[in-house]
Image (cartoon, rainbow, N blue to C red; front, side):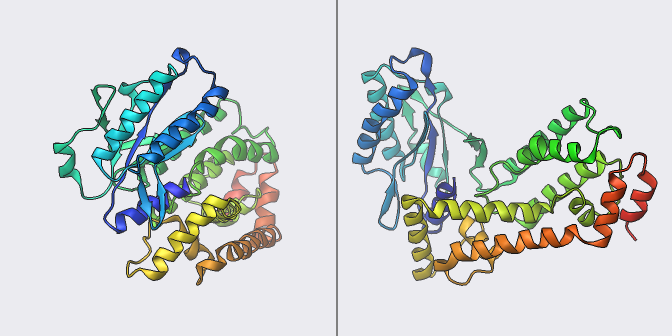
Length: 348
């Protein structure tokens, strides 16, 4: 996903646009198994690449992205998109794989809306529907290149998960703090933060995530909304959403840097910004990493991520020994301690 977000941002900066088409596959009508499909799809990849209709970042061209049987086609023109559709359709006929045109959609990025009124993408004889947002690998992407759809969706799903857990007595005073925190981390926090690693969040989005998490934790321990959150989150061995996400993002970049192709693309994007008069987009994942790590040189991103990870973990360890945090934790672990807990966390 990081490749997609950075690639998209870079292309828009140089006035190139892309289209995204998740072509959904009808597995029941296919004569090949998912394992065999993974082998035979290599032919489709080569044929799509030979068309030379993909999007380019400097000297790297990207035409198709696959994850399991999810196919993502990327083109810089509607004509190129139609050629890709034609090639994909022929591949499906050859191997008796049915691609459902009704479930296939596309998106366009950049100031090129007038072009879509002239040429319409078609797949298997049907006009492909244009959508303003689509979900790919669990992440909502929209044409405005905004994260609001995905962030709001994560918050809604998380609150739904919490409500389901409440029916399983997670908010009961008879349940230990340790079990409550375990349930929250396992079923709720992971849901809230899903797919946020490659997304550059603005202050408003980060604040919304922090508010959601703080409200949930306060509710689990029987506190009202008007209580301080910082020490309250550290007490059950949690941390602020911003710190948690920064940790996830730094670890994510480290994993990406170990992959040859990804590391190469990151290097190319860095080189583009280093030699271009264009400024690095604030919606870029790499830009956000530079801000998080206070990085000066792109060549030191991975090393600076290591430093930031150590810094976040050290702060969390230090807060465990904070006098206020210890007092709050002790009251949390007691039954019927609402009054004392409120006194410790109330806003002065």
